[in-house]
Amino acid sequence: MRILVVDDEAELADAIAASLRKEGYAVDVATDGQGALDRLMINEYDLVTLDLTLPDIEGREICRMIRTDPQFDPQTRVLMVTARDEIDDRIAGLDDGADDYLVKPFALRELSARVRTLMRRETSGADAVLRSGELEVDTARHTAKWKGEPIDLTTKEFALLRYFMSHPGDVLSQERLLEHVWDEAMDPFTNTVRVTVGTLRRKLSSASDETLIETVIGAGYRLVNPLGEASEGSED
Image 1 (cartoon, rainbow, N blue to C red):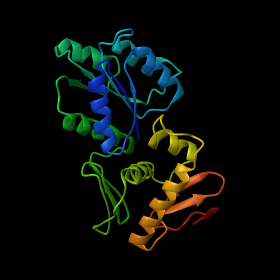
Image 2: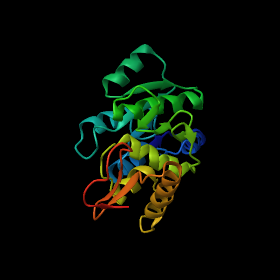
Image 3: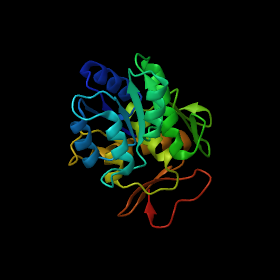
Image 4: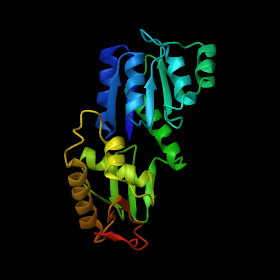
């Protein structure tokens, strides 16, 4: 999942980004409104943490643009993060289209929990645990298991598996995976996606004795339901 952190306090923005990266999210940072809009026009973000008080463009205006301007994805979730703690400010932010509102100062752990909750809305699940057959991913504890036995994954492998689990049955292209699992520091011309998918697939196969990620020729990759069969037109 890819997140844009928008805050004019550079140290706070970096702290939020570092905290979210530890949980496997791909994170970009903008310290002003124009920088945020530039990134939103280029990249697809699953969520934006948005400060209201920015040096150039009001955060509420950015939120309204995300919701109404066709240049942006209206499905991008917005978590407003601001020192404005009045009830009227919260109501105005939510009315502008924010999905949640967090008042500064806050604990990074709380922000991470709110991000996880907002991300789970994509799969219409209230539980922090994603399941596919005997495969289980706990997004809060950052663990993956097969039949209750832990699978040792790197941070990026976990992030990749979480994205697969959040899009059951979808064929995910390399471009889509690059867009949502890696941040803007990633060189798009490397074979990192293919390599990471390969190592994740081997670890899942070793744990389950099944091929859980299939390659759909010419299209991308798909997480196989462990209770089902590989789809036609795919290869291991």
